[in-house]
Image (cartoon, rainbow, N blue to C red):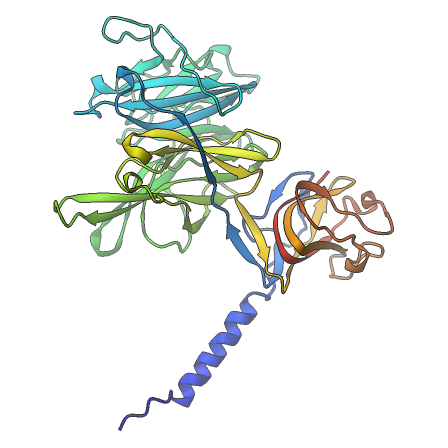
Length: 471
Protein backbone atom coordinates (compact mmCIF):
# COMPACT_ATOMS: atom_id res chain seq x y z
CA UNK A 1 0.00 0.00 0.00
CA UNK A 2 1.31 3.46 -0.94
CA UNK A 3 2.13 5.57 2.09
CA UNK A 4 0.38 8.95 2.40
CA UNK A 5 3.25 10.30 4.50
CA UNK A 6 5.24 12.85 2.46
CA UNK A 7 8.73 11.83 1.50
CA UNK A 8 11.42 13.29 3.79
CA UNK A 9 13.22 14.96 0.85
CA UNK A 10 9.98 16.65 -0.17
CA UNK A 11 9.51 17.87 3.41
CA UNK A 12 13.05 19.23 3.43
CA UNK A 13 12.42 21.11 0.18
CA UNK A 14 9.20 22.54 1.58
CA UNK A 15 10.96 23.59 4.78
CA UNK A 16 13.79 25.27 2.87
CA UNK A 17 11.29 27.03 0.61
CA UNK A 18 9.53 28.43 3.66
CA UNK A 19 12.84 29.75 4.99
CA UNK A 20 13.61 31.41 1.65
CA UNK A 21 10.15 33.02 1.50
CA UNK A 22 10.54 34.28 5.06
CA UNK A 23 14.00 35.70 4.46
CA UNK A 24 12.99 37.29 1.17
CA UNK A 25 11.12 39.97 3.08
CA UNK A 26 14.15 41.08 5.06
CA UNK A 27 17.08 40.67 2.65
CA UNK A 28 18.39 44.14 1.76
CA UNK A 29 17.66 45.32 -1.77
CA UNK A 30 20.48 46.39 -4.07
CA UNK A 31 21.48 49.93 -3.18
CA UNK A 32 22.58 52.71 -5.55
CA UNK A 33 26.23 53.74 -5.43
CA UNK A 34 25.17 57.29 -4.50
CA UNK A 35 22.50 58.45 -2.03
CA UNK A 36 19.09 59.13 -3.53
CA UNK A 37 18.49 62.87 -3.65
CA UNK A 38 14.85 63.41 -2.75
CA UNK A 39 15.20 67.05 -1.68
CA UNK A 40 11.83 68.37 -0.46
CA UNK A 41 9.68 66.30 -2.82
CA UNK A 42 6.71 64.24 -1.71
CA UNK A 43 7.36 60.49 -1.83
CA UNK A 44 4.41 58.12 -2.08
CA UNK A 45 5.08 54.65 -0.71
CA UNK A 46 3.87 52.81 -3.79
CA UNK A 47 7.01 50.79 -4.54
CA UNK A 48 10.37 49.65 -3.14
CA UNK A 49 12.41 52.42 -4.77
CA UNK A 50 13.46 54.06 -1.49
CA UNK A 51 13.46 50.89 0.62
CA UNK A 52 16.60 48.95 1.52
CA UNK A 53 14.87 46.32 3.68
CA UNK A 54 11.46 45.67 5.20
CA UNK A 55 10.00 43.16 7.59
CA UNK A 56 6.39 42.14 8.22
CA UNK A 57 5.00 44.93 6.05
CA UNK A 58 2.83 44.62 2.96
CA UNK A 59 1.96 47.04 0.18
CA UNK A 60 -1.77 47.59 0.52
CA UNK A 61 -3.77 48.82 -2.48
CA UNK A 62 -6.63 51.07 -1.36
CA UNK A 63 -9.82 51.04 -3.40
CA UNK A 64 -11.65 54.36 -3.84
CA UNK A 65 -15.12 54.93 -2.43
CA UNK A 66 -17.94 55.48 -4.91
CA UNK A 67 -19.49 58.92 -4.44
CA UNK A 68 -22.18 60.77 -6.37
CA UNK A 69 -23.06 60.71 -10.06
CA UNK A 70 -21.53 63.82 -11.63
CA UNK A 71 -22.49 63.59 -15.31
CA UNK A 72 -24.81 61.62 -17.57
CA UNK A 73 -26.11 61.88 -21.15
CA UNK A 74 -29.24 64.04 -21.04
CA UNK A 75 -29.30 65.65 -24.48
CA UNK A 76 -29.88 63.96 -27.82
CA UNK A 77 -26.47 64.98 -29.16
CA UNK A 78 -24.72 63.21 -26.28
CA UNK A 79 -26.01 59.82 -27.35
CA UNK A 80 -26.59 56.95 -24.96
CA UNK A 81 -23.09 56.33 -23.59
CA UNK A 82 -20.14 58.25 -22.19
CA UNK A 83 -16.59 57.37 -23.13
CA UNK A 84 -12.96 58.47 -23.20
CA UNK A 85 -13.41 61.13 -20.52
CA UNK A 86 -10.51 63.49 -19.88
CA UNK A 87 -10.27 66.15 -17.16
CA UNK A 88 -7.87 69.09 -17.28
CA UNK A 89 -7.02 71.20 -14.22
CA UNK A 90 -6.72 74.74 -15.53
CA UNK A 91 -6.17 77.78 -13.26
CA UNK A 92 -8.94 77.05 -10.76
CA UNK A 93 -11.25 75.58 -13.37
CA UNK A 94 -11.69 71.89 -14.17
CA UNK A 95 -12.43 71.18 -17.82
CA UNK A 96 -14.01 67.89 -18.87
CA UNK A 97 -13.90 66.45 -22.38
CA UNK A 98 -16.06 63.44 -23.14
CA UNK A 99 -17.31 61.48 -26.10
CA UNK A 100 -21.00 60.77 -26.67
CA UNK A 101 -21.79 57.44 -28.33
CA UNK A 102 -24.52 57.22 -30.93
CA UNK A 103 -26.00 53.85 -31.93
CA UNK A 104 -26.08 52.36 -34.43
CA UNK A 105 -22.62 52.87 -35.88
CA UNK A 106 -21.28 55.03 -33.08
CA UNK A 107 -17.74 54.69 -34.45
CA UNK A 108 -18.52 56.20 -37.86
CA UNK A 109 -17.19 59.68 -38.47
CA UNK A 110 -20.51 61.51 -38.61
CA UNK A 111 -21.66 60.07 -35.27
CA UNK A 112 -18.67 61.09 -33.15
CA UNK A 113 -19.34 64.13 -30.94
CA UNK A 114 -16.87 65.42 -28.38
CA UNK A 115 -18.63 67.39 -25.65
CA UNK A 116 -17.50 69.72 -22.89
CA UNK A 117 -18.33 70.38 -19.23
CA UNK A 118 -16.64 72.44 -16.53
CA UNK A 119 -16.53 72.74 -12.76
CA UNK A 120 -14.99 74.93 -10.08
CA UNK A 121 -14.85 72.18 -7.43
CA UNK A 122 -14.68 68.86 -9.33
CA UNK A 123 -18.03 67.83 -7.87
CA UNK A 124 -20.68 70.01 -9.52
CA UNK A 125 -20.42 70.15 -13.31
CA UNK A 126 -22.17 72.35 -15.85
CA UNK A 127 -22.50 72.03 -19.64
CA UNK A 128 -22.13 75.49 -21.21
CA UNK A 129 -23.58 76.40 -24.59
CA UNK A 130 -20.52 76.72 -26.80
CA UNK A 131 -22.13 77.71 -30.12
CA UNK A 132 -19.54 75.82 -32.13
CA UNK A 133 -21.15 72.80 -33.81
CA UNK A 134 -24.67 72.53 -35.19
CA UNK A 135 -27.00 69.77 -34.03
CA UNK A 136 -30.24 69.54 -35.97
CA UNK A 137 -29.91 73.15 -37.06
CA UNK A 138 -28.93 74.68 -33.70
CA UNK A 139 -25.57 75.50 -32.13
CA UNK A 140 -27.08 75.84 -28.64
CA UNK A 141 -25.17 72.90 -27.19
CA UNK A 142 -21.91 71.86 -25.53
CA UNK A 143 -20.40 70.11 -28.56
CA UNK A 144 -16.73 70.87 -29.20
CA UNK A 145 -16.04 68.85 -32.33
CA UNK A 146 -17.78 66.45 -34.68
CA UNK A 147 -16.15 63.66 -36.65
CA UNK A 148 -13.19 61.34 -36.36
CA UNK A 149 -10.55 64.06 -36.49
CA UNK A 150 -11.74 65.65 -33.26
CA UNK A 151 -12.53 62.44 -31.40
CA UNK A 152 -10.85 61.34 -28.16
CA UNK A 153 -9.68 64.82 -27.16
CA UNK A 154 -7.57 64.62 -23.99
CA UNK A 155 -6.00 68.09 -23.70
CA UNK A 156 -3.07 69.32 -21.64
CA UNK A 157 -1.51 72.74 -21.13
CA UNK A 158 1.93 73.38 -22.55
CA UNK A 159 3.15 76.24 -20.34
CA UNK A 160 6.67 76.58 -21.67
CA UNK A 161 7.60 80.22 -22.29
CA UNK A 162 8.61 79.51 -25.88
CA UNK A 163 5.19 78.13 -26.86
CA UNK A 164 2.98 80.48 -28.94
CA UNK A 165 -0.25 81.48 -27.20
CA UNK A 166 -2.36 79.89 -29.94
CA UNK A 167 -0.66 76.54 -29.18
CA UNK A 168 -1.01 76.76 -25.38
CA UNK A 169 -3.38 73.76 -25.27
CA UNK A 170 -2.51 70.57 -27.10
CA UNK A 171 -4.08 67.19 -27.58
CA UNK A 172 -4.07 64.02 -29.61
CA UNK A 173 -7.39 63.47 -31.34
CA UNK A 174 -8.76 60.90 -33.75
CA UNK A 175 -7.81 57.36 -34.62
CA UNK A 176 -5.12 57.39 -35.96
CA UNK A 177 -4.16 60.47 -33.93
CA UNK A 178 -3.82 64.00 -35.23
CA UNK A 179 -1.94 66.77 -33.42
CA UNK A 180 -4.45 69.39 -32.26
CA UNK A 181 -3.83 72.85 -30.76
CA UNK A 182 -5.98 75.50 -29.11
CA UNK A 183 -5.48 78.95 -27.54
CA UNK A 184 -8.18 78.41 -24.90
CA UNK A 185 -9.02 74.69 -24.64
CA UNK A 186 -12.30 75.26 -26.51
CA UNK A 187 -11.49 76.24 -30.10
CA UNK A 188 -9.40 73.52 -31.73
CA UNK A 189 -7.50 73.26 -34.99
CA UNK A 190 -5.32 70.64 -36.63
CA UNK A 191 -1.57 71.35 -36.40
CA UNK A 192 -0.73 68.93 -39.19
CA UNK A 193 -3.04 67.74 -41.98
CA UNK A 194 -2.00 64.10 -41.65
CA UNK A 195 -1.95 61.81 -38.60
CA UNK A 196 1.24 62.01 -36.53
CA UNK A 197 1.14 58.25 -35.89
CA UNK A 198 0.00 56.37 -39.00
CA UNK A 199 -1.41 53.22 -37.42
CA UNK A 200 -5.02 53.17 -36.11
CA UNK A 201 -4.19 53.86 -32.47
CA UNK A 202 -5.60 56.64 -30.34
CA UNK A 203 -3.83 57.86 -27.26
CA UNK A 204 -3.11 60.45 -24.59
CA UNK A 205 -0.17 62.86 -24.79
CA UNK A 206 1.45 65.42 -22.46
CA UNK A 207 4.63 67.48 -22.04
CA UNK A 208 6.99 65.96 -19.48
CA UNK A 209 9.47 68.48 -18.00
CA UNK A 210 11.39 65.68 -16.29
CA UNK A 211 12.28 64.07 -19.59
CA UNK A 212 12.12 67.33 -21.57
CA UNK A 213 9.93 65.77 -24.26
CA UNK A 214 6.34 64.90 -25.10
CA UNK A 215 5.07 61.48 -24.03
CA UNK A 216 2.10 59.67 -25.55
CA UNK A 217 0.45 56.47 -24.33
CA UNK A 218 -1.23 54.86 -27.31
CA UNK A 219 -3.23 51.74 -28.08
CA UNK A 220 -1.16 48.73 -29.12
CA UNK A 221 -1.26 44.94 -29.36
CA UNK A 222 0.93 42.48 -27.52
CA UNK A 223 1.48 38.86 -28.56
CA UNK A 224 0.02 36.45 -26.01
CA UNK A 225 0.13 32.75 -25.36
CA UNK A 226 -0.94 30.41 -28.12
CA UNK A 227 -0.72 33.06 -30.82
CA UNK A 228 -3.33 35.29 -29.17
CA UNK A 229 -3.21 39.07 -29.58
CA UNK A 230 -3.81 41.15 -26.48
CA UNK A 231 -4.86 44.78 -26.39
CA UNK A 232 -2.10 46.73 -24.71
CA UNK A 233 -0.38 50.10 -24.30
CA UNK A 234 2.75 51.55 -25.87
CA UNK A 235 4.85 54.67 -25.30
CA UNK A 236 5.85 57.09 -28.04
CA UNK A 237 7.94 60.25 -27.54
CA UNK A 238 8.50 63.50 -29.42
CA UNK A 239 10.40 66.76 -29.06
CA UNK A 240 8.09 68.85 -31.29
CA UNK A 241 4.63 67.20 -30.97
CA UNK A 242 4.69 66.42 -34.70
CA UNK A 243 7.34 63.76 -35.20
CA UNK A 244 6.91 60.76 -32.93
CA UNK A 245 9.04 57.71 -32.22
CA UNK A 246 7.87 54.20 -33.04
CA UNK A 247 5.71 53.17 -30.06
CA UNK A 248 7.25 50.66 -27.63
CA UNK A 249 5.12 48.29 -25.59
CA UNK A 250 5.21 49.28 -21.92
CA UNK A 251 7.11 47.06 -19.51
CA UNK A 252 4.73 45.73 -16.84
CA UNK A 253 7.25 43.29 -15.40
CA UNK A 254 5.96 39.87 -14.44
CA UNK A 255 2.27 40.86 -14.37
CA UNK A 256 -0.06 38.17 -15.74
CA UNK A 257 -1.29 38.44 -19.33
CA UNK A 258 -4.43 40.50 -19.81
CA UNK A 259 -6.08 42.87 -22.24
CA UNK A 260 -5.21 46.43 -21.13
CA UNK A 261 -7.08 49.34 -22.63
CA UNK A 262 -6.99 53.14 -22.34
CA UNK A 263 -4.05 53.68 -20.02
CA UNK A 264 -4.65 57.03 -18.34
CA UNK A 265 -1.06 57.43 -17.12
CA UNK A 266 -0.07 60.93 -16.07
CA UNK A 267 2.39 62.66 -13.72
CA UNK A 268 0.72 62.88 -10.31
CA UNK A 269 0.09 66.58 -9.64
CA UNK A 270 1.42 66.38 -6.04
CA UNK A 271 4.49 64.31 -6.96
CA UNK A 272 5.13 64.77 -10.71
CA UNK A 273 8.15 62.45 -10.70
CA UNK A 274 5.64 59.58 -10.32
CA UNK A 275 3.49 58.45 -13.24
CA UNK A 276 0.15 56.98 -12.12
CA UNK A 277 -2.05 55.02 -14.50
CA UNK A 278 -5.47 53.39 -14.38
CA UNK A 279 -5.85 51.10 -17.39
CA UNK A 280 -9.06 49.22 -18.00
CA UNK A 281 -8.53 45.45 -17.92
CA UNK A 282 -10.68 43.22 -20.10
CA UNK A 283 -11.49 39.56 -19.72
CA UNK A 284 -13.26 37.92 -22.64
CA UNK A 285 -15.97 35.36 -21.90
CA UNK A 286 -18.67 33.44 -23.71
CA UNK A 287 -22.29 34.13 -22.80
CA UNK A 288 -23.86 30.71 -22.20
CA UNK A 289 -27.36 31.82 -23.22
CA UNK A 290 -26.60 33.76 -26.39
CA UNK A 291 -23.22 32.28 -27.35
CA UNK A 292 -21.89 35.81 -27.88
CA UNK A 293 -18.37 36.82 -26.93
CA UNK A 294 -18.50 39.60 -24.33
CA UNK A 295 -16.09 41.41 -22.02
CA UNK A 296 -15.85 41.79 -18.28
CA UNK A 297 -13.87 44.84 -17.21
CA UNK A 298 -12.28 46.41 -14.16
CA UNK A 299 -9.76 49.19 -13.53
CA UNK A 300 -6.16 48.69 -12.43
CA UNK A 301 -3.57 50.86 -10.70
CA UNK A 302 -0.05 51.07 -12.16
CA UNK A 303 2.88 53.28 -11.18
CA UNK A 304 6.20 54.20 -12.79
CA UNK A 305 9.22 56.38 -12.08
CA UNK A 306 10.43 56.67 -15.68
CA UNK A 307 7.19 56.52 -17.67
CA UNK A 308 8.06 53.19 -19.28
CA UNK A 309 8.62 50.53 -16.59
CA UNK A 310 5.42 50.17 -14.59
CA UNK A 311 4.61 48.27 -11.44
CA UNK A 312 1.16 46.77 -11.92
CA UNK A 313 -1.00 45.96 -8.91
CA UNK A 314 -2.79 42.86 -10.15
CA UNK A 315 -5.74 43.20 -7.78
CA UNK A 316 -8.41 45.51 -9.19
CA UNK A 317 -8.32 49.16 -8.16
CA UNK A 318 -12.04 49.35 -9.03
CA UNK A 319 -14.20 46.21 -9.11
CA UNK A 320 -17.44 46.09 -11.14
CA UNK A 321 -19.47 45.71 -7.94
CA UNK A 322 -22.95 44.45 -7.14
CA UNK A 323 -24.88 46.04 -10.00
CA UNK A 324 -25.01 43.58 -12.95
CA UNK A 325 -24.96 46.45 -15.46
CA UNK A 326 -21.33 47.11 -14.48
CA UNK A 327 -20.48 43.61 -15.68
CA UNK A 328 -21.25 44.58 -19.27
CA UNK A 329 -18.94 46.12 -21.92
CA UNK A 330 -18.11 49.85 -21.91
CA UNK A 331 -18.22 50.14 -18.11
CA UNK A 332 -15.42 50.64 -15.58
CA UNK A 333 -13.30 52.96 -17.71
CA UNK A 334 -11.38 55.51 -15.64
CA UNK A 335 -11.31 59.12 -16.78
CA UNK A 336 -7.96 60.78 -17.45
CA UNK A 337 -7.18 63.11 -14.57
CA UNK A 338 -6.96 63.30 -10.77
CA UNK A 339 -8.66 66.22 -9.01
CA UNK A 340 -8.24 67.66 -5.47
CA UNK A 341 -11.79 67.99 -4.13
CA UNK A 342 -11.24 68.63 -0.43
CA UNK A 343 -8.71 69.27 2.31
CA UNK A 344 -8.13 65.55 2.80
CA UNK A 345 -9.38 63.99 -0.43
CA UNK A 346 -8.72 63.58 -4.12
CA UNK A 347 -11.17 62.36 -6.75
CA UNK A 348 -11.01 60.17 -9.83
CA UNK A 349 -13.91 59.52 -12.18
CA UNK A 350 -15.33 56.30 -13.60
CA UNK A 351 -17.62 55.50 -16.49
CA UNK A 352 -20.34 53.56 -14.70
CA UNK A 353 -23.48 51.70 -15.81
CA UNK A 354 -25.20 51.12 -12.47
CA UNK A 355 -28.96 51.35 -12.86
CA UNK A 356 -28.80 50.55 -16.56
CA UNK A 357 -27.83 54.00 -17.89
CA UNK A 358 -24.24 54.99 -18.42
CA UNK A 359 -22.96 57.93 -16.41
CA UNK A 360 -19.80 59.32 -14.85
CA UNK A 361 -19.35 58.69 -11.14
CA UNK A 362 -16.89 60.34 -8.77
CA UNK A 363 -14.50 58.09 -6.81
CA UNK A 364 -12.94 59.39 -3.60
CA UNK A 365 -9.58 58.60 -1.98
CA UNK A 366 -7.68 60.16 0.90
CA UNK A 367 -5.00 62.48 -0.43
CA UNK A 368 -2.05 60.39 -1.71
CA UNK A 369 -3.95 57.30 -0.54
CA UNK A 370 -3.47 54.94 -3.48
CA UNK A 371 -1.15 52.50 -1.67
CA UNK A 372 0.25 52.21 1.83
CA UNK A 373 2.80 50.16 3.69
CA UNK A 374 0.71 48.29 6.27
CA UNK A 375 1.66 46.61 9.52
CA UNK A 376 -0.49 44.41 11.70
CA UNK A 377 -0.65 44.91 15.46
CA UNK A 378 2.34 42.56 15.79
CA UNK A 379 4.37 45.25 14.04
CA UNK A 380 6.75 45.65 11.14
CA UNK A 381 9.45 47.99 9.96
CA UNK A 382 11.45 49.20 6.99
CA UNK A 383 14.70 51.06 6.47
CA UNK A 384 15.38 53.28 3.50
CA UNK A 385 18.43 53.46 1.32
CA UNK A 386 20.71 56.45 2.01
CA UNK A 387 18.81 59.65 1.17
CA UNK A 388 19.72 63.29 0.70
CA UNK A 389 16.93 65.63 1.79
CA UNK A 390 16.45 69.35 2.22
CA UNK A 391 14.17 70.83 4.85
CA UNK A 392 13.62 71.39 8.56
CA UNK A 393 10.85 68.90 9.33
CA UNK A 394 9.66 65.45 8.32
CA UNK A 395 5.95 65.13 7.52
CA UNK A 396 4.13 61.80 7.16
CA UNK A 397 0.73 60.74 5.82
CA UNK A 398 -0.36 57.90 8.09
CA UNK A 399 -3.24 56.19 9.86
CA UNK A 400 -3.26 54.02 12.99
CA UNK A 401 -5.81 52.30 15.16
CA UNK A 402 -6.36 53.50 18.72
CA UNK A 403 -3.61 51.15 19.90
CA UNK A 404 -1.40 51.45 16.83
CA UNK A 405 1.65 53.66 16.34
CA UNK A 406 4.36 54.94 14.02
CA UNK A 407 7.90 55.84 15.11
CA UNK A 408 10.87 57.02 13.08
CA UNK A 409 14.63 56.81 13.54
CA UNK A 410 17.31 58.68 11.61
CA UNK A 411 20.46 56.71 10.89
CA UNK A 412 23.82 57.34 9.35
CA UNK A 413 24.60 55.62 6.06
CA UNK A 414 26.14 52.71 7.96
CA UNK A 415 22.89 52.11 9.86
CA UNK A 416 23.98 53.60 13.19
CA UNK A 417 21.29 55.74 14.88
CA UNK A 418 22.07 59.45 14.90
CA UNK A 419 22.19 60.78 18.48
CA UNK A 420 18.94 62.48 19.55
CA UNK A 421 17.14 60.96 16.52
CA UNK A 422 17.08 57.31 17.67
CA UNK A 423 13.86 55.30 17.76
CA UNK A 424 13.58 55.66 21.53
CA UNK A 425 13.81 59.45 21.14
CA UNK A 426 10.88 59.66 18.71
CA UNK A 427 7.51 60.81 20.00
CA UNK A 428 4.98 58.13 19.13
CA UNK A 429 2.58 59.02 16.31
CA UNK A 430 -1.00 57.86 16.89
CA UNK A 431 -4.02 58.97 14.89
CA UNK A 432 -4.85 59.76 11.28
CA UNK A 433 -3.32 62.64 9.36
CA UNK A 434 -2.48 63.66 5.80
CA UNK A 435 0.55 65.62 7.07
CA UNK A 436 1.78 65.13 10.65
CA UNK A 437 5.20 66.34 11.74
CA UNK A 438 7.56 63.77 13.24
CA UNK A 439 9.08 64.99 16.51
CA UNK A 440 11.93 63.79 18.69
CA UNK A 441 11.97 64.33 22.45
CA UNK A 442 15.17 66.34 22.50
CA UNK A 443 13.78 68.91 20.09
CA UNK A 444 16.97 68.60 18.04
CA UNK A 445 16.88 70.51 14.75
CA UNK A 446 16.45 68.24 11.74
CA UNK A 447 18.18 70.86 9.60
CA UNK A 448 21.54 69.86 11.09
CA UNK A 449 21.52 66.67 8.96
CA UNK A 450 19.86 68.23 5.93
CA UNK A 451 21.94 67.63 2.81
CA UNK A 452 23.81 64.72 4.45
CA UNK A 453 23.26 61.03 3.65
CA UNK A 454 20.77 59.54 6.12
CA UNK A 455 18.60 56.46 6.37
CA UNK A 456 15.09 56.49 7.76
CA UNK A 457 13.86 53.59 9.87
CA UNK A 458 10.09 53.37 10.33
CA UNK A 459 8.51 51.04 12.90
CA UNK A 460 4.76 50.52 12.55
CA UNK A 461 2.11 48.77 14.64
CA UNK A 462 -1.45 48.40 13.30
CA UNK A 463 -0.79 51.28 10.97
CA UNK A 464 -0.67 52.43 7.35
CA UNK A 465 2.01 54.74 6.01
CA UNK A 466 1.10 56.42 2.72
CA UNK A 467 3.71 59.09 2.07
CA UNK A 468 6.57 61.12 3.53
CA UNK A 469 8.07 64.50 2.79
CA UNK A 470 10.78 66.76 4.16
CA UNK A 471 9.71 70.41 4.27
